[in-house]
Image (cartoon, rainbow, N blue to C red; front, top):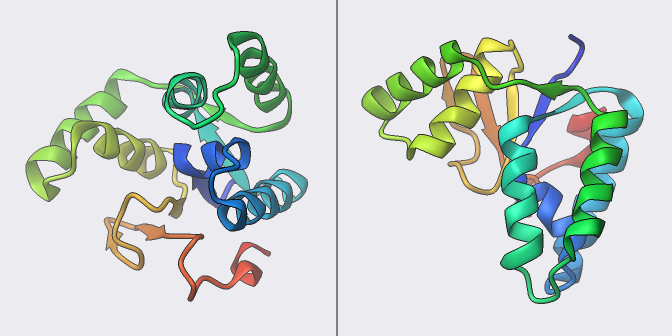
Length: 149
């Protein structure tokens, strides 16, 4: 796999949420760059969280047909990482050893076991590195988009 970045749910959601236009624009830029370069990946967990969030938790929710079309587009154009038993076990270890919430631990475990060195998310401490997986907040003012190249 050539993916270098696992894109977390919040990056996907901001592309559909017009409550913060700056984050929406940044999310579009990130997704376009990673999709075009083939350096980005998503997971089944992230797609599931995306559906729940864009249909229930944003100011102008999508209907399920629109959410389904979006997921179908991601399935056609992005590498999608499956959830495995080993990922669940690694996530449990992440909760125990690093005090992640379970769902954040599962994102970390997915990246780690698929050898993806960077998770793009605003939900982790940006700059932190745990067992070869770095966390970067692409919405941070210090984030340089050239890093995605």
